[in-house]
Image (cartoon, rainbow over all chains, first blue to last red; front, side, top):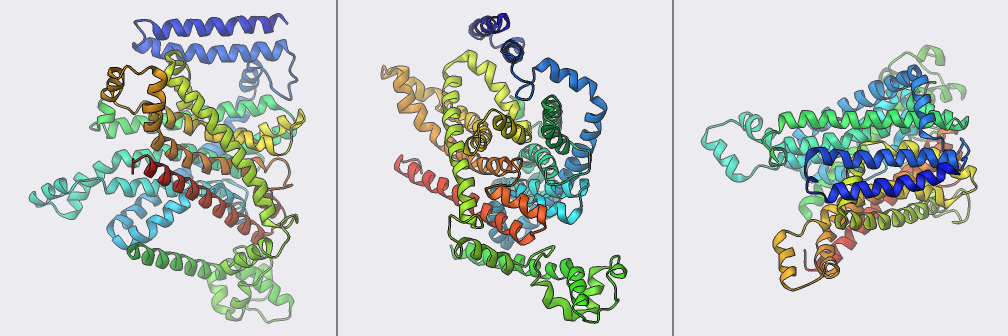
Length: 281
Length: 305
């Protein structure tokens, strides 16, 4: 019971600190901007821990964070194997193939106006569909191993990437293209020096959206059949055993992998589109 | 209009043609096995000897089997007409209360999607208003809301279903919670952007009118956030549908489009998988189209289009 009372004290206290910090004169400094969400996150974890322990919530409903952390540390070798199977083999390979394929398709669409008018609406339509539903079919075709997961990821990232790249390639103004012409630039030069760089913010937008989709695709595809390794497999198998601490540990891995993947793309974006207003801030 | 319809039709017809062309090599091996059982002479004979041969050479040697590849009961790749026939049979030719009716399963999924979408959108708008008007909330919650978009939230769907099941909550609500969760974050992020979209000049103007912050919300911030809201709603409803479908997987294939997918993959009923997939696609397209229509009507009435 004392744990519950402690949680009820910690929550308003942390909230009061955050209000003070947010309304203080130093609230625009970088330190405070990192500190406030950090306090909020840690408070959530602390309240979760205290409430679960204080109210004696059964482990099959919600394990406390400390236990999840323990499992995470103990099962590190298994988690690493799952990570390699699902993320490195399944998601990354599919991401690379899907994004490259979409990029070259976008070049074709951009080159031929017929495709722009015909293929793009179809692509837009397909981008909104629950493509994850193709997972059972692809698992049937490509087998249980990572090849089928990779195929699901290819399909999932293809359409958002295609739509973004095409709209990026149409981003230049006629003035800019005229300028290229006055420089006597060939169509290849105009592409490499003007239209591709101008499309980069859009391409990176597509790449960023695709990072999350790739992980989702690889994990969910494993629910339809997988070898006895992989994050999706471990999640569904551990749920069957009611080992929720293991499920949460996998979710922690997925969260880290997802945000690390996203951040990696953002860092590359910062290097390549350093000229864009949103990056100069 | 004619400029776009003709290319779209040509592209769709080409895709259908490619599909039909792909059906032959995909299904030739099972078709030949069936034909051999029926007494036909197949070159080379014996399914074992054919296993490692390329499907194209098998097609070239056994042209008589091409017809059969389009009419198998459990093809690796069903032909489009098979899927359409199955779709017609399971929607129009079945009573909608029947467990074999796709309308029945589609409605189960749709109701979870809509309930979850409504919950997620409502909570998302409320949180967005809180974030815009409360600086502490903005600084604490917003970084997490943005970071959570990089996390594959869908992975926890099975856990939510099983945990809620174990404390006695079954049926519609667990799926709706997953849908709500998926549509929640796009709405929060879009709505915060939208409520902040009025520029300082407009806010200053309202101040010169001596308006209070409630009036500022109803007369300026909320109207100018509507385009952002609709953009988020389109993402949110598609995500909700995916959430409801994935939410139907771990309960062991009982009801709903996701259950049809899973049952189909258990029993190798490929035509059933494809028809469920097509039904889900139609559902998603209809939902997004409805939101798009609402967007056009609303923005037109607000004079923003």
